[in-house]
Length: 302
Image (cartoon, rainbow, N blue to C red; front, side):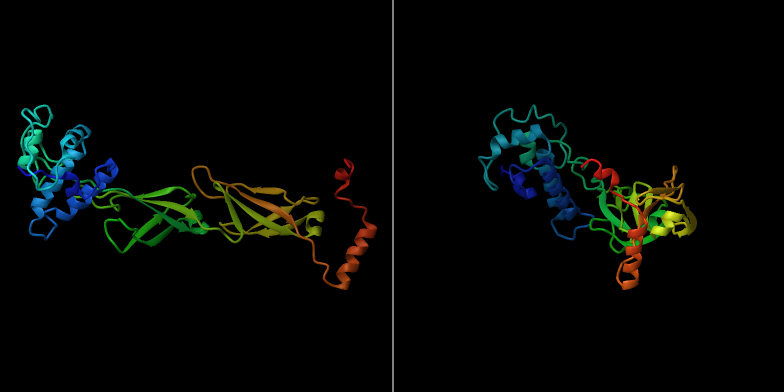
C-alpha cells in the first residue's frame, strides 16, 4: 500500500513541537472542513489531516510511526511487519486509510468521532489585547467603542463597558468575543487596561497624587487654596509653616472601589523669579533682614 507522510500532509517538519503541530492542524482543519470549504476534495483532505494529527499528537503513536517513517517517502509502497499495530491501543475502525489501519489497527478520529465530519469539534481560543483609557474614565467608568483586535470572532467595532475604579493591569473579559472555533463556542476576549499619563495627577495603585505649587508666603503664613480632584474642586487649608514635599491626605478621593483610594496633595514651594530690579532688591532685603539658613543642620556635620 502507499506510504503516507503525515508530516508533509500537515506541512510541518519531523521535529515539530506539539504546540506548532496543533496550530498547523487547526488551520488545515478549518480550511478543509466540508461545512465551510468550497474545494472539491475538501472532505477527503479534511479526513487526511485528521488522520495525520491523530497519529502525531500522541507520543507513543508518533514514535511508532517515526520508527519506519524515515525510510519511506510519499508514493512508496509500505508493508508493515507481521503483528504490527496489535498493541497500538487504537481499537475500533473509523474512516481511516488502509495505511493507517495496517499500521495501527484502525481507530477513532482526532476529535472527529470516527472520522465523521458532523462530530468535528475544535474549541475557540481566547484573545488578549490592550486598551488605553484616560484617568477620568478609570475614575468614573465609561463606555468605549474599540476596533476588534486581530483574531476575534468578527471584524469591525465592539462596545466595551469600563467599570469605575479599574486600575492598570486589570482585565475586562468579554465572553465569546475571542477566536472562533469549529463546532465549539468562540473563546473569550481579554482586554488589559492601561491608564494614560495625566497632565496633573499621578497614580499610585488606587491612590491619586497631585503636586500643588505654593508661594513661600502661603506656606509660611498659611492659606486656603482651591484644589482640584476628579470628583470636583474642594477648599484645602494649608497650615502655617508647611514644608515643601509635605503630603496632605484627602480621604476617599482616589479611585473608587470596595476600598476607595485617597488623594494626596503634595506641597511644592515655588519661589518667584528674580527677573527684574524690584524683585532682586526684595530678595536682597530678605537676605539681609531674615536670619534663615536652611542648611544649618547639614553644615554642623562638616
